[in-house]
Structures are given as C-alpha cells and as structure tokens.
Length: 279
Image (tube, rainbow, N blue to C red; front, side):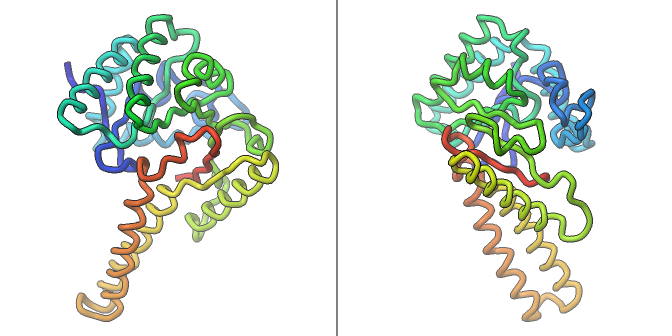
C-alpha cells in the first residue's frame, strides 16, 4: 500500500500531514463557509485547499486524497501509525504532525467506534513521544464531538465560521482575517487586519491570540525575493542595490524557516488562538 503520510510547505523539515480525503469532499461539512457547495448566506466558496488540489501540478496529491477518501478512516489511522513507527525505528520522528492540511476529519455521523479507537491510539502514540499536533476542524459541532473523543490528549481547534465570532467563541479557535481586503498592499493590509482581530480576541476573552508567523514570514520572503528580482533587472547583478536586496532575502529566508510549523507550536497549544491572514 502507498504511504499515507504527507508533507507540506509550511512545516519544518520532517513534518508530516495526515489527511482523510479531498477538500470539499465527503468529510467536509457543507456548513463551512469555504465549502464549494456551501448554502450559507455568508459563504465565500474560497477553500484554498480545494483550489490547490485542482492545480495541474497537484494531480498526484488529488489522486492520493481520493484514495484516502475511499479507505476506511480506521484503516488510514492504522496505516499512519505503522509509518510513524517505521520512522521512529529509523530515528526520524517528525517535529510536527498536522491533521487535515487537505480535507477534514470524518463527520460525526460517519465516525464509527472503530475509527475513534484507532484515532485515539494514533494520537496517543504521537503525544507520548512529545510531538506537537495541529488538529483543526471546521465547525463548532465537529469540534465538540472530537474534543469529547480525544480532547484530553490533544488540542482540537475549531475553525470559526461566522465573521465577528472571534470575540465570543469559547475554547481553542482559529479564523481567517482579511477576506474582504483587495487592491494594493494586500498582504500588509491583511496582516494588519489579523493583528487587529487578534487584539480584539485578547481584550474580549483574556486568551492569548497570535497571527500565524508562518504566513507572515512566508509573505515577507516572497516580497524580498520580488524586490531582489526587480533590483537585478534594473541595476544589474553586482550593483549595491541588488546586493542589498539579496541580504534582505537571506534574512527573510532565515525568518521564514524559523517560523515554520514545528518551530512554532502555537497551533498545538490549548491556551492560544490563531489568526490566519487570508492567503
């Protein structure tokens, strides 16, 4: 059987993902405002994961996720655990485990007892080895269901669906900020909106709230790379202007690496809430 563990660009080297199916597939709630078939009035239908899966360079990923969706979720948990145990024997334990970089955990209505037993065994094995886990779900009901099943082992993070609910929602949550921001300086403005909403969350609830550093520093790196390309075209390879932008790229590269999931463990912490600038 093909490997079920995956990798993802926001993760530190060696990080792994565990996915149960396609984005917008059978595991994803149509109550999610980002679902391609959402009927909600405030639906955005901008699921970035679904868009990525449709790209020509992601055909293999999409096929893999469809295979996962055809497997029973219990079997997939077992396969993931076997692969992790093999990594341990090789001395290559991951620094970070991310559930659902694509798709989601099974809906409560289809999460049978065998799956929940297997999921709990998988999560228990991971946390027993001190590996931090990011486990998000896309609705309040789903969050409550999985918190009951495994919330004593791991942070089950609810992805908020209602604009403005970040000031009232209970428990570990995350949300996306800046969906309405377009035009010039879009990245900086979305980061600023995310910072403002994190502040609102802290003031309203007393909980710690942070803006995802992997997104922010990833954007800073892209900006630095763009500036370096512009300086190269305008001033030439050996120019002071180009050398200065290359130094900025080097600094941004280090910052982006340090901010990757696994180096940052905020999403695994029950006392911390996360804001993602729309990306």
